Length: 379
Image (tube, rainbow, N blue to C red; front, side):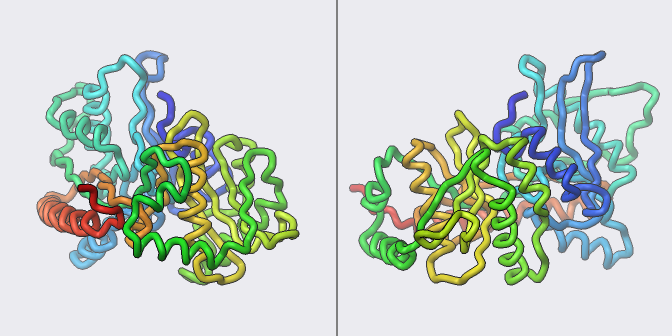
């Protein structure tokens, strides 16, 4: 049951809870699902009782509004996700050698019964492989206990699809090697953007190199940017970030943007990345700045990440959710998946129909983005 992303690991989830970013006060009440056979751990799944829809990145506010219109309660609901982290990965960790479909079917039966006290269950940012296993398992009949009454309504599994933007390393030896694959106009635009901020000093720090003072500086950048953008200080607190040094320091990569000659603690901007040793993917997660400079966000959050991937020979750079402007900078549209179970029969079909239409529109949207990719036509 090795984690497939830095965020699926116990250390990351524990840091969220111990720092208070996740808990009853934040509206993310942990009630993780654990499956044992006798005393042997067979499977685990993150599970939260939610009283709102913040921090999920698969938006269901319109569903909640529809429930409210008919004087029904959409909250509490159940969510299997990594809080505040829209990164695709396994949501049900199953011990090697165990029948995945059978275990997934058991978990679904548990969730069906939990829907007697919750409006719905939502599994967010599942891999395509895991999504297929969940659908196959939905057809498997599992009786957990003869003494537990089955729910009156058996909720069906509803799939949603979305879009993110990832950069792929096709064996590039340098950033210029990557640029050579782009059309002339896009290549010139990226070079112009990088020249605008070339005077700054970009410094990577990891593990023990990230002192409490550096975390304090990063958090100030992060908080100030959130306040300007959304009016609140962000979902995460300084205690969470600072705990990462001890809990998963080898996976944390902090990029500092400084004036030449200034100390790290004088950084004017910072971006937080994750790269687990032996993994082929870099994850860009959080960013913040104290001074506004044209092009600095693109440099710190995209181009420096691409440079890192090329230098480290990583295959993929996942720069986070949203931002179709990434496409013109070489990031390709990638499909994301979520699964949903709705307890209320009167809403179940309407939501299923909505998701089917959304899937069609999402595919059309992705096709359009693929056509707009800046790579030169090969021929």
